Amino acid sequence: MKNTDTSASVSPAWLLVFGCWLIATIATLASLFFSEVVKLPVCVLCWYQRIAMYPLVLMLPLALFPFDGKVIRYAGVLTLFGALVALFHVLLVAGAIPESAQPCVADIPCSETHLNIFGWLNMPMMSLLTFAAIGVLLFFANTKINRGHLE
Amino acid sequence: MNKKILFLSTAVILSLAFVAATSIFQTQQETKENELANNNANVVSRSGSPSKGAADAKVTIVEFFDPACETCAQFYPLVNDIIKKYPGKVKVEMRYTPFHKGADKVVAMLEAAHLQGKFWPALKLLFANQQGWTRHHTAQPEQALQLLSSLAIDKQQLQTDMMSEKVANVISQDVADAKTLEVRATPQFFVNGKPLTRFGYRELIDMVEDAIALAY
Image (cartoon, rainbow over all chains, first blue to last red; front, side):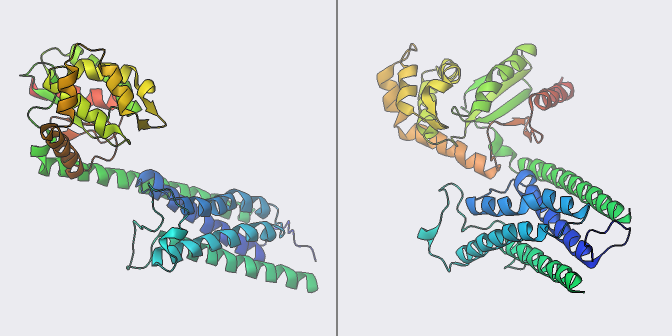
C-alpha cells in the first residue's frame, strides 16, 4: 500500500501529523505573543525549547503536501529533545533541581515564572504538555503507517 | 484539495487570531498605562529636576533616561529640535533611570554636575561620546568622569557631590518614581503627565503637538 495519497481523502496518519502542526503552531504563536507583545523575559531554557518547537511549524507542512511519513523520525527527535529540556525546566521551577544546576544567565533566572494559571500551569509546564501531546500524536501516526505497511 | 483548504484556512485563522490578540492586548496596555500615570500624576515630575526650555511653558515633556542608553542618545538631538521648534511652549525635564550596569555612578556625576549648573553640557558630552565610555552596554564610570573633566567644572566639588547623600536621594527618588510608573525601558516619555504608549519619534511629536493645540 502506498502512503503518499494523492486523492482527496484524508488518511488518519495525515490528520495526526496535521494535528502536530496545529499544536506546534499555536504553541509558537503563543510563545511569540508572550515574549514580543507582553514582553515577558525569555530565559535560556525557554530558548532551547523554542529551538525544538519552531522548526516543526515549517517542517511538518512539507510532509503534509504530499504526505511523507518519514517526517515522524525527524519531528520525533526534536520533540524528544524539547520534552527533555521542558522536563528539566519544570523540575527546576518546582525546586527539585538545586539552583546551582541552573544553566541561566544572571539577568533572567529560569527558576522564576511569570504566568501561573490555576497555580500550577506555568510556561515550562505548558511547554512540557505541548511536547508530550505532539509526541503522542506522532507515535499514533507512526503506528497507523506501520499498520498500513503490514496490511 | 480539501486538505490544502484545511491547512491554509487553519493557517489564516491562527494568524488572524495572533494579530487580534496583539491588538487587544496593546489597547488594554495603553489604557492601563494611562490609568497608572493618572493615578500617580504627582510622581511624573519632580521639582529640581534638570530642565530645558521656558520655565512657564505649558507643555512639559518628562524623559526618564539612562546616559548609557543608545536610544536615549539618539533621541537627545530630536528632543532638542522639538524645544527649538516651539520656543516658549515646550520644556523638557530629565529623570534618572540607570538601567545599565555602572550607569548609577554616571547618573550621580550628572546630578553632581547639575548642582553646578552644568547638567546639559555634561549630558551633551556624554551622549556625543557614548561609545567611548560604554563597553557591551556596561558603563565605565572612570572614563565618563575623565570625559567630564574637560568641562569648565569644579572637579573636586563634582567628586564630593557624586558621593553625597543629597545626590543619592535624588537618584533613588527618580528610580522609585520610575518603578511606580512601571517604566521598563528608556527613554520613556511623558507629555503633560500622559505616557507615550506607542514608542517612536513621530509618535512623540504628534503627542507634543496635540498637547500644544490643547494648551495654547
